[in-house]
Image 1 (spheres, helix red, strand yellow):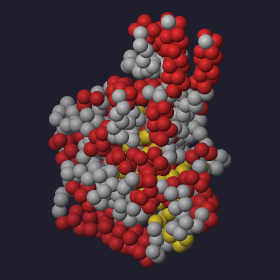
Image 2 (cartoon, rainbow, N blue to C red):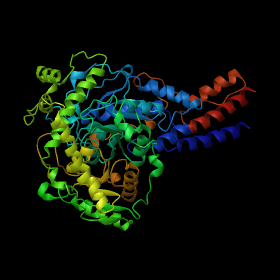
Image 3 (cartoon, rainbow, N blue to C red):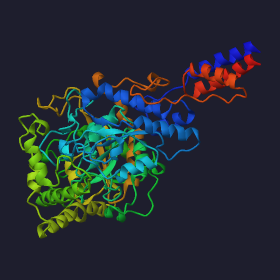
Image 4 (tube, rainbow, N blue to C red):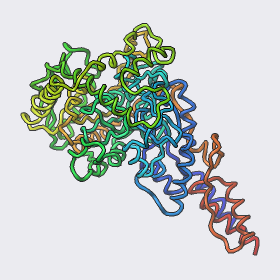
Length: 592
C-alpha cells in the first residue's frame, strides 16, 4: 500500500512539473483566467510577477510612474473570493495599468497627475468611472503609466515625456520614440508589464502609441466610455480605451468599461445595451466586407512620408484574398481641408481651458493651489527644474496653456465646433462611407486621420502592421529617436459612430491571419525576464501575503497538520493541489 502511494506521488510530481504557465510577455487575459481558475497560480502571484517585471525594465523604459502599494492586498482579497466560489467578472484577479490622467481613489496610495508635479498629492473624489468599472469586473489596479505630460496638451515637449515620469522610450530600440500621449500604456503592454492597460485619446493618443509599440489600440466613439474622473483636454474629443497585446483582450476590456454614465452626458448617445465585443470577433470578417482606402492626404507623399507603404500594399492583397471588396482610392471630399483647419485649434484650446478648470474644481485638495490654467502656467514657470524638459529643441514650455488662456465660449467657438463636424463627418468619414457603401476605411496608422476622427469622435482600431527595414537610418540624435530600424508600424480601421463591433472584427481577422506582433521582440535590456515560475510559492518582495494552495480536508487534526506541511513543501498551483491531496492521503495512511 505504501509503495503504491509513493508511486502515485512520483507520478503526480511529474504531472505537476508539466503544468505550462503562460509567458507573461504575451499572456492573454483568457490564458491568465484559465490558470487562475485551475489553481496553477494566484492573483497575488500575478501581481508579484508583474511588479518584478516593472522593476526590471522601468529604469530603461520609464513606462510606469508609480505602482499601487495596495495591489497585493487587492489580489489577496480577490484570491480569497475565488476560493469561496465568487468571481466578480471577466477581469477577476487580473492586474491592469492605467494612464496617469485616469483617476484612482486616493486611498489606494497613488496619484493622478497627468505627469505633472502641479497635481502631486492632490486628492481626487474617487475612482474614475472607467476604473470603477474595472474594479467591479474584478480587476486589480496595478499602477499608473507615464504619458506625454497633460496628455500632450500642456508643453511643447517630446512624445512620452512628463515631469514626474521622465522620458518614456521604446522597447524595440534604445531611446526610440513611442509616440504619445498614452506612451507608457503602449510600452507597458508591449513587454508584458500588466495583463492590459488603459489609455486616453484626443487625437491619436491611443492609436499612435499602439502602432509604434506593436500592440492593439482602440480609440472608441466619443461617448462609448465615460470620461468622468479623467483629467481632460476636450469634451468634444476625449475618449478612454484599451491598449493590449491582442484584439481579444481589447474586446474583453472594452466590454467592461463601455456604458452610459449619468455624470458624462455624452454617453447618453450610445445604444442602450453594451455589445459583447469578444463574441463579435470573427476571423472570417473580411468575407464580403467593403473597405475603402483614402489616399489623398492620408497616404500621400506630397503631405509627408508614408511609413509602412510596402507593408500596407501587402496587407491590402491579403485582405482581398480573404474576401474583402476594396475600393481604392476612396477619397474624402474634405481631405485637403484638414491641413490648416483653424477650427480644430479653437475647439481644443477653448475646451482645454474650461474643461480643465472644471476638473480642478472637483478635487478635494490641491496642495500646490493650482485651480485654473493661469495657476498651472505660474507653477510651471516657478518650477522649471522639475517641469521643463532639459532639451534645447523644446522651449515653448507653456505652449497649449498660453494658447488656451485667452479663449472664450463665444460664437467663434460654436462655429468651430460646427466646422469640425462638417469636415470630419458630413463631408468626411460619413460622406465617403455612404458614397461607396463601405463598412470601414483602412490605411496605415496616420496622424491626419487621427485628427479627422478626433473632430467628430469616430472610432479607430489599430493593430500591428509590420516594422521598418533593419537598414533604416535613425532619424535624429535628439531623444526620443524616430524613425529607427525595426520600428513597429500600425494598420488602422476607421468607421462611423459606434461601429466598434465591426472594426474590431476586421482587426481580429487581420491579426489572426498575420500574427505580425510575434515577428519581433524587444531588445534585451528592455525585456523583463521574471515569469510566474519565479514567484509562485515565494514570499512577496513587498511584504504582501502569498496565498497557499488548499489541501484536502482530513478527519484528524494531527493528520491534517502533517498533510498541510507536506503539501506546502511542494509549491502551489494545480499540480501541487493534487500533490497535496495525495500527500494528505499518505499522512492519513501513516497515522492509522
